[in-house]
Length: 352
Image (cartoon, rainbow, N blue to C red; front, side):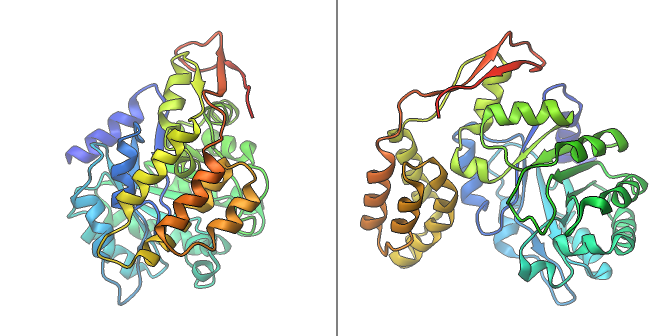
């Protein structure tokens, strides 16, 4: 058994919840992983997905997240595709790298993906999922995991999916509590995530709408999940993993100040923007992150309107400073009430 697998198993065996950084294409790359570690970081990291088809090759820039993993934590390689021989080939190749597990993406809601019957598009074909998982379970000798949504346009299919997941002895299942059609709109179905927790022999991570320590605690209590996968919430708030840990230790959790958020954006710019590319391309890359960070801004609509129109670094940081520097200082966002080590507490949430 590899060291990465041993570290992964140890994470799942400990009593504390597992906190994973979600894979987000063209966002959660190697430079972003490196920056997250400076803010406390996640317990577990997932690569951007490797696109798998008959003529595919493992993307070198995604492999760098595995070969240069700067986090000191286990990393899982995620694949997306539907061609069984190609998925088996890619899984075998990926196991030559320091991976804790191979993950199959059954949840990507991007139309360019699901229209090719990959990612969330596969949820329309449970029998095909059954065949893919069977082939991969035979080919994967490290841990094998899946990230899924509740269904494509109807969560009724989730009852069919759970026995399939159980049949193939997954080592971990992550459930985003929405359908593909919902994208990122609407509430999370905590009951169906809890159903997966109860029905499956493997641990389950809950995913979706975790933007604060208080929401994290609520999600864990409502679902009984082994842990959480956080994506958009971590981009907007890189402190979130440490905030969750602090809350569970019975400590106050405060929101970052405006200057702290601006400092994070400057560090993010330096981390992910290569000086070898034109400044306008660097700014365009930052706009992907700002779509999530905008939720922290005063007058979010105006902030987004202005940030989408900037073309250089000076304009970019000018907009950020105008909208973010006035955020409340030391705003308490979660106070544990009778906190205990298990984290099963009531929460008093204040501030915005």
